[in-house]
Image 1: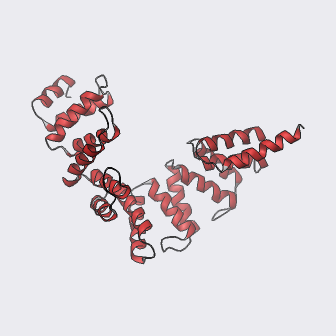
Image 2: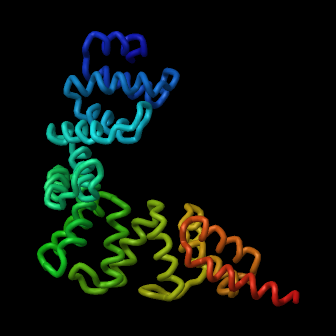
Length: 288
């Protein structure tokens, strides 16, 4: 087993892999006091010596402004260098930058090209991102939508929970050229929900609440909404608020309903404010 002292010696002697490993130790605090400045220094040494993951990490650190002052342009260039040298994650990230116009001029064609290179290497994240771009920009093109579904399926079959959620949405609502199939939607939502994807957990709750593709079961709806709500998903929190306000499958509890409405608003689901304010007026009228 390589000791920290040995690792430092190897890194200082010019071993690129050991420079990268030493940087990781300083970055995580594994076996040594965490030191972001030393982590950056060793990542950069490895990056300058051609280590692809180190190049990517230097780029991420430059963009995040940790530990050095933020330098988005330098960060993008380090990620570009890593991408050009073949790192799939860097290619995917660069594609996202081009699609969003982050640190570069927005260019959908270049976004697709970089995402495609990463997707061709089997990176689920890139397959999912490229699918999203094709779905959004493909319009009525049947081939673009079919390719999007195929890419989402590849990512989903690798266990990507966001891709699984997207497939659930597509099959539930009949988007991207597929026919509505609640059974398939439920299967993909369930796969994503099992991995803790909060939007999928929320949608599973909706399906059980309404009895779509399953036998209506308010207790299961509540269970899925609670899982989603515990992750801060505002719509799930608001749905629990409505459930407790009306006593749907639970004992009516207006105090708890207000708590959930407040949580939903705090987490960005502003639609819950109307439910909260209406309930507050009701409660006030009971005592006036």
